[in-house]
Structures are given as structure tokens and as C-alpha cells.
Length: 242
Image 1 (cartoon, rainbow, N blue to C red):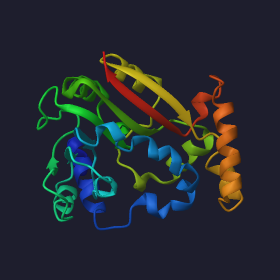
Image 2: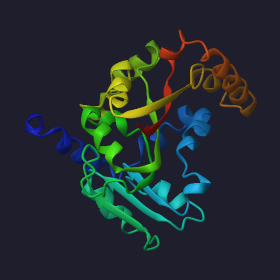
Image 3: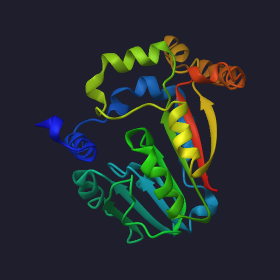
């Protein structure tokens, strides 16, 4: 029966089931400890705190709750009805709205209305051939979007994914060059490669802060080499209208 579901239905069912269980990011907090700075990339910029913000994949609403001093209009969307229901119970101010919407289509979002969009680990769940033109339409003239996404990465990361299939949906696909090209067909794309020695080396040393700083410094310099960039774990992606 599961095989007869659409991609969107599979995604919704997967995340509906997760809403009341510990998040994998929390379970794997040890692995993510050395890349917390990378995830700060998608924080709502100071000059967008009074403007129109869209979060793709709001899930439990943790990012919305963490924003300080927001006076604009915030919309969080998710394919999971359970996730949206949960977000609506958080007691956030009236300028925070949560909706069930397919991020491939963004049907509930008016064209040209989004000044800043963001998401963490959401694009690789989507049909980028649909998402890219939809997002391009929704961005305002000076609007832009930022995402953190997992890349295909090195052999250790690929092995981990093969060993943990239940932690991800069947249709998700870590970023590769084909993914980037689908975005570039409709948007200006800027990518910064992150996490080459991280998380592995810091984990061997108990995620001690001096080791995290050292590997961050090394990653920055090593990933300046284009030959090493395909080995990165995480991508910082910025998207702007053409």
C-alpha cells in the first residue's frame, strides 16, 4: 500500500509519525555539535525582521520560536498536517502563521511576496524542477532564500545513509551537481561548502571546543580547493531571483 502513495503523501506520513518522537537531530546531537555554526546561516537576517519571511518545512516550529524581535509577517509551511497542528499550539503572536502546503508548489503564498525564505534540510526532499520556478515566483524583487542541505559527501557519509534508511524518506536525495543545475535553471545560486573534517575529527576528541575551532579553520582552507568540495557534508545555499 505504501508504494502506491504519492511522493508528497509519503513525506507527510513520515513526518506525521515523527512529530511526537525525538528528532533525529537530537538523537545525533553528538554528530551535529561541531556544525552548529553552519546552521546559523539560515537565521532570519536583521534587516528582514520586519519583513515577509517564509520557512519551508517548519515541522515543530523551533526556528520560529527562536527568532528574537520579529515584527514582520512569518509563514511556516509543512507537508505534514500534524506538524502544522503542533506549530499552531505554540502560542506565538498573530504575525506567525502556519499552513499545510506543498513546498514544490507554494500554492498558499502570493507571487512576489517573500522577502526572505529559509529551510534546514528541506530542499533534498523536494522535486527541484518544480520548487525552483515556484520559489522564483514567490520572492520579492530584493528577496532571497537560504538553505542548509546535505551533500552526497564522502564515502563515510554515503555508508552511514545506507546503514540508516529508516531515518529518511524514500524519495529524498542528497545534493549533487544535477540538483544544483535544476536550481540554476530559474535562480541565481551561490554555494559555500562546509564540513569536510567535521564532524568526524571533532567526534574523536569528544567535540572539544579547541578541536572544533581547529577543524573549522582547516575545513575552510581545504574546501577552497574545488577538487575537495564534492567531499563536503553540508552546503550553504543562497538563492536569488534572476
